[in-house]
Image 1 (cartoon, rainbow, N blue to C red):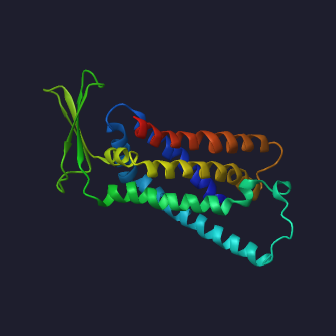
Image 2: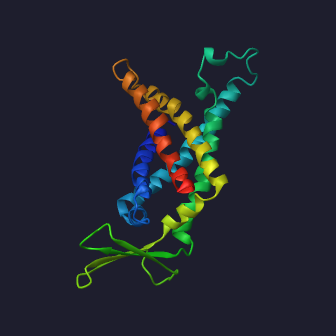
Image 3: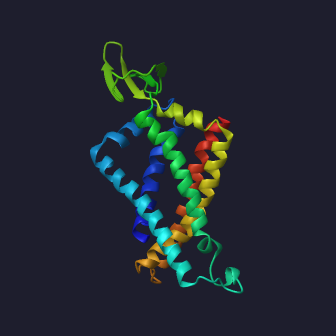
Length: 243
């Protein structure tokens, strides 16, 4: 649980950095290039399988630990101590984790599966070599003969032509749906509480919670993974919904 959890925390940072390309005012050119890189660069593809395995292992071990706890005490406490013995996040990690697991399944179905399997349209970007901010965008219908991503430079016309499978359009369309935005925001709230407890617990499990490092672990767990990362992710659907 600790090792897979910390690996997933690392992935969140990398995923967030890449998804920040959504905020660029370039009609998705940078984000589509990022999506291609993350799905076709061999070392990243290898790590992605490790990621999928970590999600499954983390969820399975959560069930095993929960079942073990239930078996150890089949009859609950007569009096619930509330916050006196454990924080709310600690007592509800199972619920928070379940929300996140449902979100991951929906999220990957809407984006990962569609990018790999659906007949998505393509975006054609014509970028001026003299002014990189001058970008003309047009849509191309799905064509099985087109590469997922291609770039050519036309020196005579002074422009770079980039053609990409348009995942950006799928993201934009998904975040126009109010219930999907609500699900995303609820999931990011669950992620926040899950990480506030889970990050510190992971270090405690592997024995790296001595007084020297504990303040730093607490700070990173609360302010980076509990606040900054979920807020940054939550800003994405809100950006598209109200844009």
